[in-house]
Length: 100
Image (cartoon, rainbow, N blue to C red; front, top):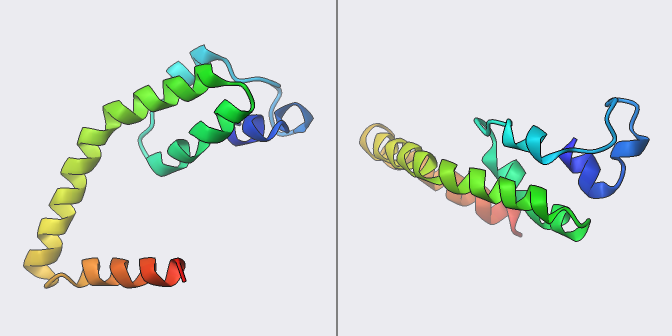
């Protein structure tokens, strides 16, 4: 819904009965997976005049950041210990190809 709202297409969508997203709806949202998706929506929400929703997302992502750092550091330790850094090397290779 947020993506459609940012694109100005939520009201035209037949998939959702609502044509707007309220601060309350977003406040009740729990960001448990794919926080990068929500981070990418902050700019477009601001551009379409929804600073209120962008601020809520920023606040939720700031609260989530420490958990993500702990998770990432744990994955890196496991990679170094059991995979000899192979996962990090793979991620680096994929990242280079992605930006080529």
